[in-house]
Length: 131
Image 1 (cartoon, rainbow, N blue to C red):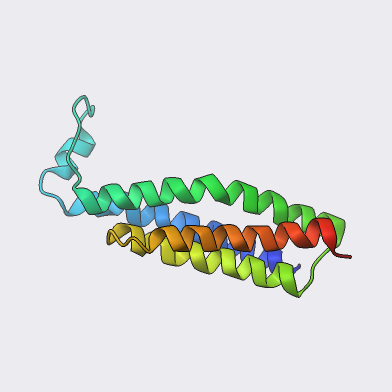
Image 2: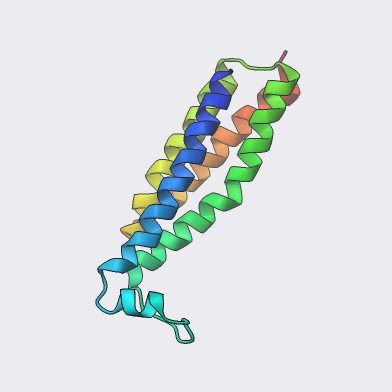
């Protein structure tokens, strides 16, 4: 298994962990369990942090499928080099740091998002221009 595929597995696990964190965050608000057990005909105010966590996870979902396709294409093409391995790690680390940055309301989240795109671009570079 290539390093990029290993990073892909960890990125998928990170996505699962984000689901659990984002879904569990509203549980801290009084009345959430009653609302959650109801038909949910009305909205429940989960608060700003839980909302940011949900949006951060949704943002992850925008880039993860693209990352997965690129990494799988690299594996099928038998292409892997230092650039793609570093790019995969950059993508994952940027996505991991993005989540708490967004939850805390930090404006650095945009820099982490762009950094994750740089990691994606590094993998694309290897696919098209290396080997």
